Length: 169
Image (tube, rainbow, N blue to C red):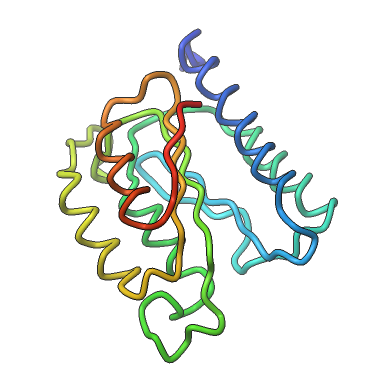
């Protein structure tokens, strides 16, 4: 199979740069994980990990080794992010173990997880899911749109509704 084209290489370079910047900005006391997505959703680690220099490097290298492909299953990636620390985002009884920030990097409008072909997903459906998962608004969601991303209005709404910011990557 052919490798990624020039546009995909540029986008993946921007994604790597933005992830590195995010990892470098983590406080030493932070716990983190990295979730990558196309039509599937993959996690760097099963659980949250301490933000040691070694873990930051390993997470970055894991992500940097991936080839861009497929669609943009944002809904699945967000669901995994909310479930990673346990039931914290789904049940207020677990608020003490909740994640506090999600950084979403994407280069496309949201799609479902269809394979080999995916369909566009209604952004309103994802916003509704996040409203349920983040009902207590304990998690800030910051969004980075890469390469004049399609669906920029959705990303701006997602960030604004969850105490985050949107930036162009």
